[in-house]
Image (cartoon, rainbow, N blue to C red; front, side, top):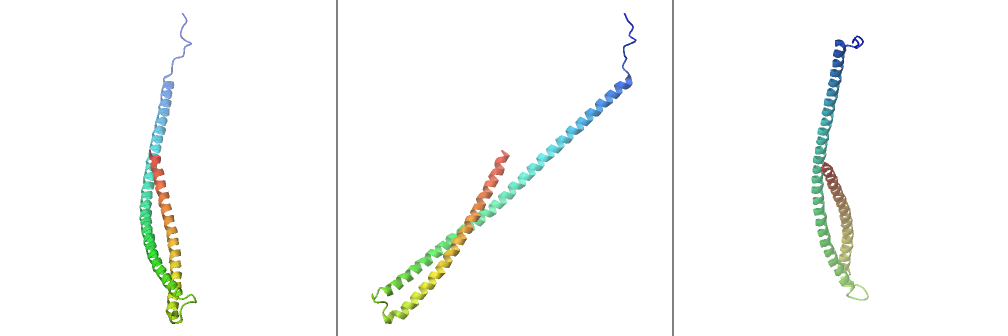
Length: 166
């Protein structure tokens, strides 16, 4: 048997250095993994808060748009009713003008000419008013359609955010 002189005996200082290095590596890994967990957990919380704020904002805007759309539609319906009523009065005036003109094939009799012209002028003035109101109603209806489209887009946005949560 050969003596064990050539065999290397572990040095206690080398063991300590190895243990210290291992401990440092483990500490660094633990610190990095803890930091990563904190960072990504914090990011998740911030994302949830942002999403919650976005949902709240969209719901508030959707509510305001709904109220505006409802008011707008009520206003347009009311204006339509008023315009129809005005149109009925206008048609009655037109019938009165026609009745003057139907009295004689040669034209309106001389004795009725002044009341005919008064009725005719009122009718023409009323037609101009009707046309103005009708244009205003079209503008209001177009504006309402824009409000309704905005409302629907907000609703779609809210649904998309909520669908992204599931």
